[in-house]
Image 1: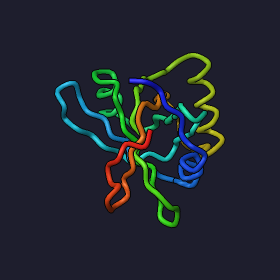
Image 2: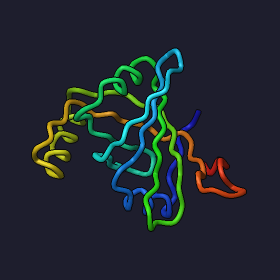
Image 3: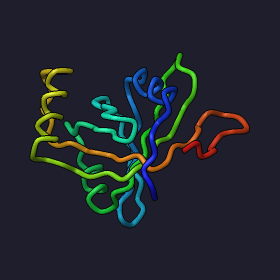
Length: 136
């Protein structure tokens, strides 16, 4: 798999989305999906997600580094599913930067780790004839 870059339209949809659905699966394929709000598009290829409450998601990513993120919000045209390779980072400069970003956005939350995802695929998830079509 190769890394892809989100288009300007995809970036705008990403920025307009407040809550995302993050999906992972265990090594054996048992699925898990959670709502996440501390999601930051660091560049057109990289998503950072703050881990304040995740348990099964962290376990899954350690066993199976693939993840998917639903980018959709009412009032914003389009809906995309972003897939990528994820890793858990709980120390070092990237983790410290993520902690600061979470604290700045919501001071009462404690960021336990950073889930960093490199985007590898993007799919259309709107209803209609293009549903499921790979965009990038």
